[in-house]
Image (cartoon, rainbow, N blue to C red; front, side, top):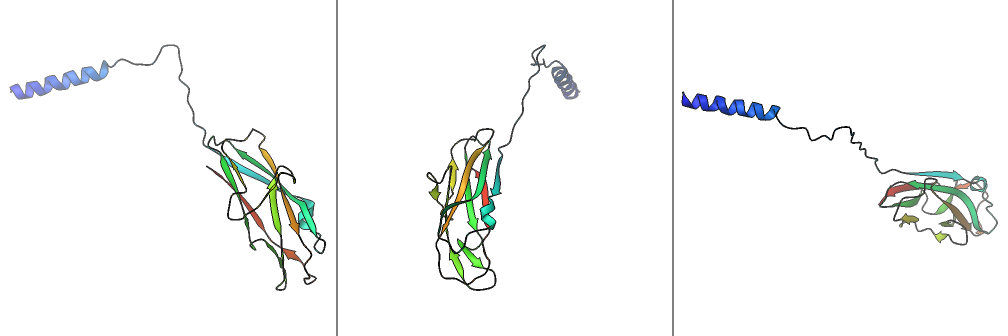
Length: 161
């Protein structure tokens, strides 16, 4: 009987303790909190020249795209570029190719050569609210190739650091 009585007493004390726990909320205040996930995006706009390349004419630093990088990641981000044809314009109906080089940057004078194995841009902080604008420049020579249409597809990717 004493055991049952002790258990009832413990249960009553536990119930009272649960009801009597004071609230730690400060009167007349509301605590606000929220979380914003890191987000990065690219806006790539092809220049008119991208679909009307002057093949047959040696070309240097032809602007073929405008890229706006936007990221709120405080650790920064990186931009990579891939080529469907490994950096050559491929003939539509034949074996010929036209090799080209690319440069990426804020202007043709400050653009750096693109290496498809490495990021074309890196940042160690977020961008401004309007983003960071860079340009893609293309250069190629005048090899003796078939008269035909030549093309390649470039894919940009942005990822957080």
